[in-house]
Length: 265
Image (cartoon, rainbow, N blue to C red; front, side, top):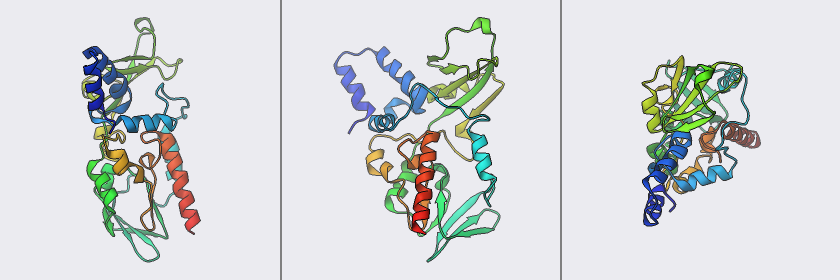
């Protein structure tokens, strides 16, 4: 099994300094993983990079941010953002979605694309298969804080800059604004800084964490099975793709789930 505890031991046996481990923690946990490297699977990380993850940062940005895309898609849906789902019941020829206000929505098939921490709160009838129950029990969503900071152009050096405080970069060269992306331990420290605006994903009610990070053994026991349908219920979201934690993964999973529904008729 490829895990970070084995990596630490391998480095220590070869006399690697604590600085090497600290630099690895900064590069992977603070700038990408969102959990300490001792709690992440290197196999899962390597698999994600092989699938097309971009460790150097974003290649494409959406005007208005990813939320603008989600809002335009949601505008065409019967159930609007902010609606709380409490249960999913499958019958012989339909799926019934139960809402917190007592209403229900029925369809021939359904696609579930919400973070695993929120799926833990749903009632499933029939119950989920064993691998999905294990996923809901073990899934780990890391800590990330993203903060917008005003700046004086004369006081900054070369950007982007990666340090133990997080990744500091300038999204738009024409706007005097810096963004700090801080994950894992850096996220906890970033909560105390003053900023123009900040998002702490661990405290967002509709995510309950940043994004899925597999721990040692997770990928091979349940991680690769998150895309498997259960009856008339299909699964999307970045977790159910080869690029968990990326919006590209969510797009790929959405296309795959849509194809499943259309093929099923």
